[in-house]
Length: 328
Image (cartoon, rainbow, N blue to C red; front, side, top):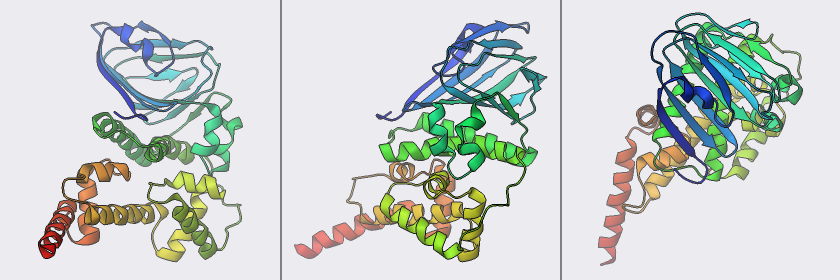
C-alpha cells in the first residue's frame, strides 16, 4: 500500500471485534441487543493519523479508558435507534469530540455505523488551519458534541465513506506530499459538520482579495506539483475558509475548491500529455493529484479539456511514436 498508507479491513463476527473500534485505541465493549453481531470494520492509517469506520447490526455499550493520549473525533454515519455518548443524544452526522486521557462511554441501542479520526492534539493547528476556533488545541481539550446540518452533514458523511473506500482500494500507495492532502480531505468532512454547528464569525478583517490571491498563488508555486488542500492554505496564510472563499469569488468568480481542482486537472493533463508510452496510468496520476473517484474525475476532465484522460495519454503515445518515426 506504500510507505504512507496502511489499510486493514475485516468482517466482524462477534462483539469482540469492536475492541479495536478506533485504530490504536482499546475499547471495552458489551453487547446489548440480541442476536449474533455481524458487521465490518476498516482502518486507514496515514502516518500517525488514522480513520476508522465501523458498522454493526445490534445494540452495543462501549467504554474507553483514559489511557489514550490521542484526540478522537467521531461522526455518527447511521443509526436505526437511539445513540447516546455521555449525556449527548446523537443525531445522524453529528460530531463527537473525545479529548486525550478522558474516559468515554456510549450506548448504541440498535444497528449503527460510525467514523472516527485519531491523531495528536498538536496536529489540529495544521489540520484545521485558518479556522481560529478549530485550529486552537484548547477547543478540543474538553468533550464536545456538534450538531450537524442535515444537508451538509449528509454530504460530508457520504464523502467520508467514499474517501475510505478509495484509499482502501488504492493500489498505488501515497507519497509524502499526497499523504498530507488525504489527511486534510478526511478532516474536512468532520470540520464541515463542526462549522455548521458554530455561530458565524464575520468580524474578522477581509484582506484585499487580489493581494490574498497573490499570496495563495505564491504558496502554490512553492508547493510545486503536489496537491494542496484548502485547509493547508488557510493554515499557512492565517486566513479563515470564509475569507478565502470570498476572495476567490471576487477575483475568479469561483470558490477555492473549484480553483484548486482546475489547477490539479491542469497538472494531470500536462503529465499525461508528456508521459512516455507505458510509463504511467490515468488512475495512478489522478490518485497522486487528489482525485479518488475516477468516474467523477473523468467527467471533470472531459468538461475541462474536451477529451477524456485516456485520450490525452493515447495522444502522448501517438506523438512519441511519431517523433520516433521522424528520426529514422
